[in-house]
Image (tube, rainbow, N blue to C red):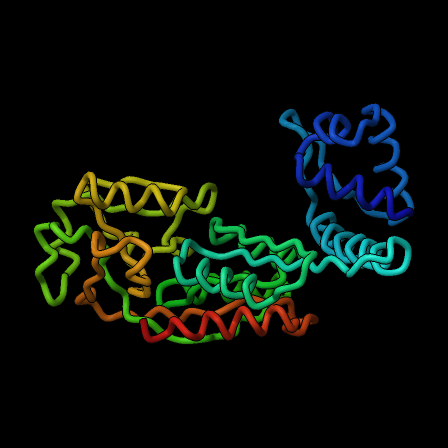
Length: 300
């Protein structure tokens, strides 16, 4: 197999379609399909399942893709350093739940890095996708939380995919709502107090359950529920609809002035926030800088 064939497979996986990938690569569809079949034959595995909607990675294909990304990235570094005589282009990717502090730490990483060539990726996404991104080596690490309610299921996923969870700090769950909200003057808020108001949760797609939810107590029955995929949108719904969400309470005030407040939730639960890493992969220098930046927010 060649580096070019590996690049083809990466593009097909990202597009989810051989037709769309062929357009991007300026290849005919039969040529691209033939290149993939050659790799599958040589590697003695099936990388993609064909379906009506396009293609999807097989379980073996996911693992193959992770190694393919590493090979292609290393080749690009070699070409940049020794053929093009340019400073190497460093790549670093984090997949994370929708945490303001995770995004802010990423900004600090970029500021501290300071070199002229880099490709940095911050992917705020669904919980299961974080696990997949780290497993497939698309992301260097993933940021999420464990609690009493989700730990057994998520740990099983980590073990199955060869991942380790490294705890960074704990946080008491807080309720986020607008400053003029009827409950905003409370010292603590109980779940029963929130019943009249819309609950805002992040969408988890096919893995919609309390085990993969970003919000604690998401299995509590409520009459009003809104699911959102965007972190900025959730703030708009808090302000416009008196909605609420439950998160870590770590929320740098300067990002939204005084329009959003966080109040401790009067329930017994703890969020253990940490990062996922492949068992066979050490934390890189950039990973260490990012984790150091994250740790600064543990007492916010």
